[in-house]
Length: 250
Image 1 (cartoon, rainbow, N blue to C red):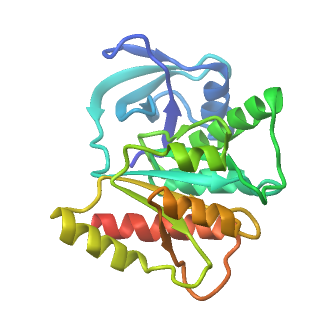
Image 2 (tube, rainbow, N blue to C red):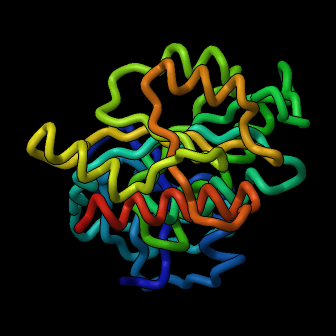
């Protein structure tokens, strides 16, 4: 894979040249030190890539000359991560890992034990920051698809309204939680196929409350164990996405 990647938002699907934004130009030319003649992969975050030559290395207005276009095939499954907001900068790390692991969508949730509450402008700024984190991760790992990051939602309302998924999972520390392998095997036996659209909820520090877990069960969520150890929420999110992705690929 070429060393350089740049995000672009285009008005046409068949460009001859691609002018980069000031931020992307700075990242490509100043941070990554790309020079005229270098190969750069431009991508739109929706699976389209253009293999280009860097024609102008102006720090705030770089221009790419298109050589050819390619369309990246999406994953055969779609995972949505519903993540209860953790403290500090951990949500940034979760967004990056979710992007690297191919999550299609990330839903930030305010649950009963969430200690971070975002309203108005503060919420909008956080979403912009998470979108930037996702973009950085996509460029680093070569993901041609940027995950959709939804507005912050109330966990209770989201659990009740979650529709259109083949399978709904929730990470659980409670006794009786099932293994992912068992739940996927039961689904495949009943449906004759693997699930295509999966929602997985991961709680905050302290996990979801018993009331939230009971509500999720009533809404059709399967409680899934992530093993005998208590994981930090950012570890739990990466673990959950990793094992689910692995199982859906096999």
